[in-house]
Amino acid sequence: MRSFNLTFESGNLTGSADSFDSAVTDGGDLSNAAAAAMNGTTRGVSALIDDTTAIYGEKALTAPASNVIFLTFYFDPNTCSMPDDSEPRVVFFITDGSVGGWYLCTAWLSYETGVGYRFRCIGYNDAGSASLMARYTISDAPHCIQIEIKRATGAATNDGAVTEWIDGLLIESKTGIDNYHVFATQAALRVGPSTGIAAGTAGTLYFDEIEVGDNFPREFMARREESALLRM
Ligand SMILES: [Ca+2]
Ligand SMILES: [Ca+2]
Image 1 (cartoon, rainbow, N blue to C red):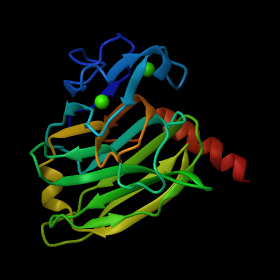
Image 2 (tube, rainbow, N blue to C red; image 1 turned 180 degrees about the vertical axis):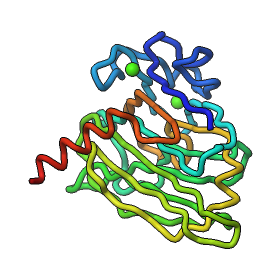
Image 3 (cartoon, helix red, strand yellow; image 1 turned 90 degrees about the vertical axis):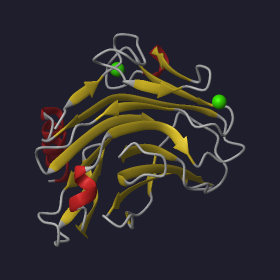
């Protein structure tokens, strides 16, 4: 598959190797900004939500030659003010790129009064049915989100899976997904508050260091070993 690592260090939002291919910015609400830098870097993506208009960046994916997609991105709710439990607010997609098209995986952010920000990852099968993970509470701080999507091994099998890690810790795995066909049609990664923005939302989300490949990044393995040691 096409692997890429979007660091945004060039200062570009689109058009360079370290940035998106294209973006819907709503007049510059989505931008490359120093304030959005995470993981020790100098630039990132700032998503200013000042209305319910979708804003997002896209990077093309070619049909994966392997049967796994591994995604890493850094995300910070950054004190964004959100109506209570206003799910779904989609912040990440792997999609076939068509309007009303098929999704392989999405991730949603919501907010619950007295609890805080909640993050949910979802896998989809060939019929468009969702396998919803639980909503996990995340702090108002930068987080490393990692998602592994495994393709079902055949057209008539349902052994695909989606697994999520947050800050190096295994959160949940959804198995038994018949995603054989939808996996092969995926054309784009889309990042940003791109659908379901509730009226009254106000603030700026941060994204950075968006890496897609067919294997676990070296940094992830180091984090996983570190967290395993902490649990001993
Ligand atoms: Ca960066
Ligand atoms: Ca706007």
